[in-house]
Length: 103
Image (cartoon, rainbow, N blue to C red):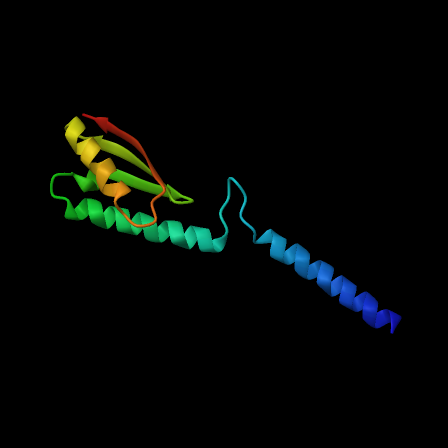
């Protein structure tokens, strides 16, 4: 009986440790968050490709916890603004950090 309680306690402690290792932190995402961000990144890239006024092949998209960062180079300030606006309209985007430079 004592051995059974000890095994149960150790099993519960091990499960708690293993599950907490999967939890996201402020600087790292859990697996689910990473997948969600990958989907958002793909949707933003698709939206940029569909917008013919933006040279989307020169714009990089990174996403972390729903926050999209745009970087790269475009020809005009209007293109940079349009890229940010396009990214903001994508479902799941919390905010957009527009680091696109004008060349």
